[in-house]
Length: 139
Image (cartoon, rainbow, N blue to C red; front, top):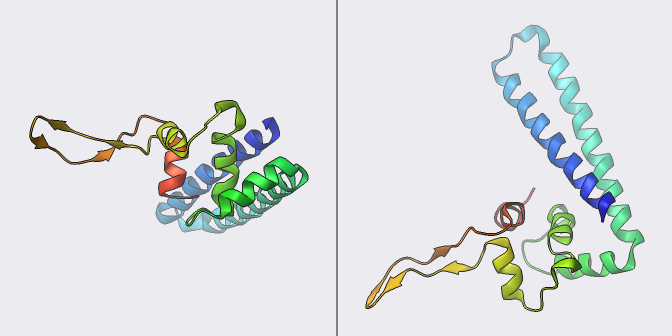
């Protein structure tokens, strides 16, 4: 799991750096535009290499592969999110019900009511922010 966590962190860092360079491209002096475009291309290539390493890591471990296949059966969960969800919902959390996993991710409903008054039901947002973000807006 340490290797998976390390590779996922590297992807997050590369995506952040890529976004910074993309934003810089919009406001930069045209003299360095080509340099930034080259850097963006290299980052895209590195992202693809690391994603392939993650796929191979998951495929080599039968348990991870089985859990990844189960996660991919969930509508809206694709290969980009599976590795993050595998890490966030790893066995050391010992979830026995889906409600526990949803609570861990901060995706359970927060009910607001008092007596006869009932307010809006919203997400509690008290769990793992990365896991919740992946469920709402995948990488």
